[in-house]
Image (tube, rainbow, N blue to C red; front, top):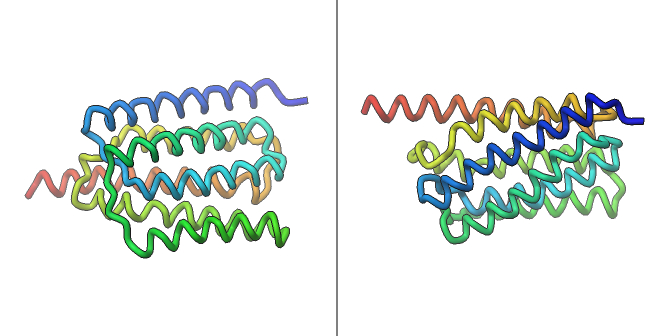
Length: 195
């Protein structure tokens, strides 16, 4: 039986996901935020595979958040084709291909632990186009969304029904990554303001 508090925490985290990304999507549609198309393509592929691995690892209601994030990343990817940054490098393509290698590791070679490690690494590398773009254009990212994402991933950890590398690696990594990216945006905005 699933403890009630885990269901509540998961629902709150899903609500925060919709709230945070709702603001982000509004920013995209008003041309204030320009997501990098390839970042969201990589995140869509990697997040859906990660969701599958979390379910496989027994995450239970804690995997709801990853599924919702995956679906929203897919939606933002399609928006970014029209409204976003599309500068793609060879490295960006390599990161996407590594996501498919991770899927192969899980489904064909039956190595779910190596698959999740590779996926989370790929997910982080998929952040590179957004970080590169944000170095010069930090106002084209929604700071609040990234801060809220760090909190949401923290809540998703509390909602997990089983704690193991398959269920924990993704949310723990993204708590750290989103916190650091939020700080990066704040610092870059201050630096550019002084210049």
